Image (cartoon, rainbow, N blue to C red; front, side):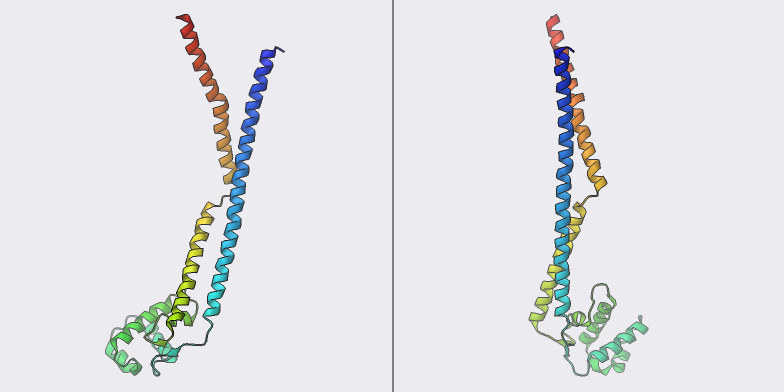
Length: 212
């Protein structure tokens, strides 16, 4: 075989080999990044679980002391049952008469409505102590207790957002393979088709210049 053709074949083979190596390298890099994201996600989930357990342990203290002796947890529970049975009830005077522990106090009755709405939000609040800490109108507790709970909630929100972000960055094997194929096609196009178009353009200009 002519040496010129041997060099041509060898050069094209090297271009093809480089294309394959670059494509495989790209896939390997994507896989490494994906594995790193999976490990990071697992660490974030572990941290979130730790915060949740810490919060559950913190909220396992004895029931809070009522601010008004007559408006205790039992009275509040009875009032909540009344609201549940009468969702559209609006006669405040009758409520005050039925529950004298409210002491005709509009602040307390408004708080009781909020307390009922909070209890109904079972997806957000898991324990009674967590709900009661939202209502200083009914219960006695220290500010440091609220600060600790807020700090735990902030940590929980932080890790939930991190998990959501990291989860969106994790790709399936099919997605990684598809991206690598697209990159491989682009490299192949650049290494061969685009290169030959450039060669052809340069050759055409050279021929036209020679004719002049």
